[in-house]
Image (tube, rainbow, N blue to C red; front, side):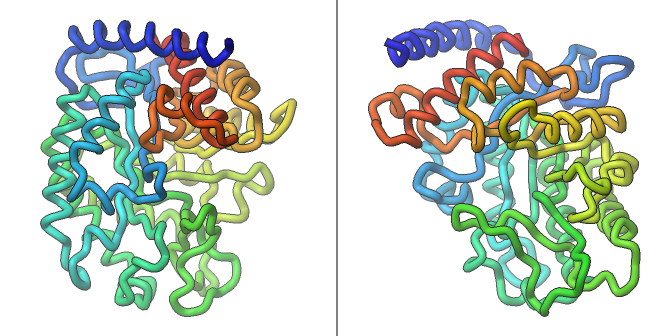
Length: 365
């Protein structure tokens, strides 16, 4: 009975979504708002980023592993995420795809990125372009893994210069995210030890240096942000720039070296990744309260990893005043397909996607 009611809600929202798409204005760049409005379109309308991370599909394939041969799948997924209420999609660009040789960008990948941006424009979606992914450890180029700090930062500026040169022409860019969950190690790491924190077979956490060599960790993080942001703005001067943080509540993010107060000085808004545990969510609330006092905050990743979907929905409702936007995950299976499956994962994801769609229409009409 509950499953049937959920599907009815999906079909009703789908009809409403088609009506809204028919009258949707052409995309215009998003900018930082004034006063109580964190983001606005260039026309002055308020904008609340709402949508999904599109980092992989349900078979565990990263986007660049199928966008060459299965472009209709990508287009269908974009249409489905739009139907589910999204206005913003976060895509995770991988280093191995965007370099064909040391320090030499891959023109085919850049062409695919341009096509992805055109697809977003036609679908009425904005893209959060998150870069420098090394999620699949086995595919990280050996030359890139063996670079020292200076060489690696140089390669990263080439990556962002190339990406921004393509993306600067598109109104569908919401922001550039320099890296997913970077960190400055507190103790020296071995040569090539750039990756950490594997989850589900992917390496989402990445060091920006192997040895701070006596430099304050916050200073290293600041210089890295400035170098990469400068590369982007050399091609796209009006870009919004952020960096994906997995903040801690102790000692101002002492683990990563990316103090939110420092990061707020260097970026246009703060992006935090929140996976709250239990109640009363004190740690997650503290992160949001601390960060929202510094700059507009987008909860760039959230998911009922530790909470049931109904409790996760309540968390978002309760804390919406602290965040200017929210993104969860979509892995290529719509609720109707998930409703035919009986695994725990499929049932949980079906429940969450239905609730997310309804929540989005309530909080971001």
